[in-house]
Length: 139
Length: 139
Length: 139
Image (cartoon, rainbow over all chains, first blue to last red; front, side, top):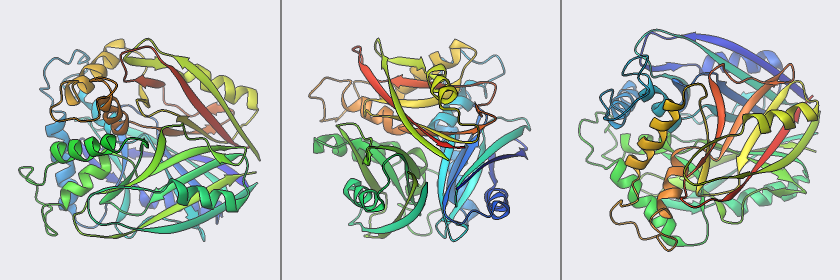
């Protein structure tokens, strides 16, 4: 049984989703683990993780729009706005999605469905460098 | 330390929640693992997982209604609707709930609370065959 | 490779967020595990877990307000209200946040970001004793 923890950086260009499936798969293949679990963890509170439809970009366009409408920058009454109107709203979008995600491994492959991709969901307007930690456990 | 990955199919009959606790427990008991973690993962982007109140069906009725109102099929402006008005809305309901869930194991039992059940949450109107992957790690 | 499952109790004083990072870290340090995964699991359906901004209390004040407005106690049409108007609404707030969270471990430390704290999110008005289970897997 092996336990490995690695990390990588994603440079974002503002709000939106950024595919990271290949980054996670590359770490898995290099680890040699055939059966087990991969945990993906984002070390931020104004960006998050989602596993989302990976084929048609309109699906992710709807995702972006829906979250802007559910938690708009002019949401009334927010007080944690020291860094601007995308400060508290970023945390709220993060908490409605995911900070960690665990994906089973079999035959050395992530057991994602055909239409599933792993994405980093950036909630801030400005570009950021985001750190993603990947832990692998298995044989 | 053992690492085991299995899967099972849930045949859904349209929108709603489907109990899968017994399916996960059966895999756990068969594995012989006494201490560790069970990760449950759904391989779809238009269905999700929830751990929800398992006793009173009215709790799940409210869950179904709340999500229909938060993400209604006539939500304005959605463009990913090639498969109908329950296409993009299914992805949005999925991303607000969970794709993976990890449950501790002790004394060979899932450490669920008394009122917790594991459910597959189907977001499409038509019946579907849904694949759930279960990874077990432990002694 | 070790597998350890422990638990602790959090006494809540009604709705709000309660820091539990130190409780989880104490279990990790005592385990001696240096590389692996810590899974935190809450055994309730009317309280949940979040990883949230840990520095400025106004961030969590906004979190509390946002969830009260997204799922208000007078939300129309709810039928699972045997325990009061904070009954079904507690389950809905729970399902929009998290029941389990997995955090990577490296060099014997939780790999949380600088601004991340682990919180129990209580959704009931009355004080409750909440059970949190922590599973550790690693070397």
